[in-house]
Image 1 (cartoon, one colour):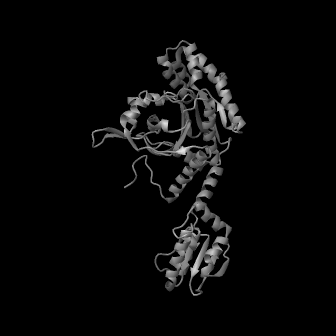
Image 2: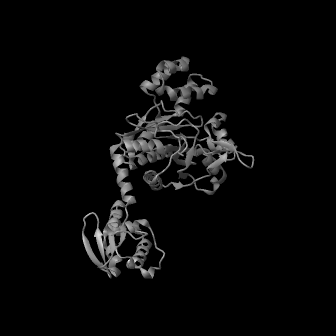
Length: 432
């Protein structure tokens, strides 16, 4: 039996790569003052229908539960966030700055960069209408990409403004009920033949193409680029009015991140959605809001295809998976002493392993090498001394067993790693 189409198994190395991505997402978010939240995997179907329309149902894993409720596995996080904020926003100081890393499900055709399940970083600012919030959010997106070792030569964030197009359509006397249709055509214009786009735009084609090719003036976008320039991040962004995001709930600045080579789908996308919380809360709350999402599938492909980003990920994974100490038991009568030492080291935060059953010494050292242990400690004929061997240099020394912990603590590499683990230990401080 295999995993279902579009779903993934995470073997240890795959899980380590996933956790590496999660760690960068969390680290950058916390540097920017965002707090992590989460919501239920299962929601009422109507929550997603109210946001995206009835056509969304064919893309969902939906069913009727045992209580007779129409429910669905979450395909995105914004409706859940809007529901949560509408219910509890009075309890939080504004602006609310939250992020989450939920698992999402969509019943779509699996293809490169898109599966039926994925993890998705979501970052939102609620309760702030200032364009400075848009700058802050785009800066978070850029800094996350930088955290993976990606540069302005590797990725670009293309920014636009739906209000620019609303002003244009208003000036062209286009009925408001046609605006979303026109915006969807503009959104797809880069991915289809010019003739087809022109046909769909009709009388608007010439004016729209002129804007797309020559650019349009937007003081708001100029301000956002200037704000990013003040942070030294302007090289990562490009004003591109073709980016309008096809979803109807966006109300202002929108943006998408791409690899410069153009080989992959959008890495991230989002923008301002000032009316959505009011819409989904049946009018009980009205708060300006903006946010973006970044999926792990496309991002993972980009990291693997980029030499610098891939090398950084592999180095971090190797370091995180490295064992501090492997205890080699050469004499079974010393197993009790060895296991006691193993527990003491673990209590101090060291990563320690040992053979659970009797094994040849050579095989135990092979296991230590395989686990990439930094130090092997041998319990054998030398007792009450133990032999400490640094596997990288092959240096060995005999140490009285009661001094082993002090010798390891004196090693800057091992002591700092134990300190970073944050483990206080289960024994009393008097025993330290």
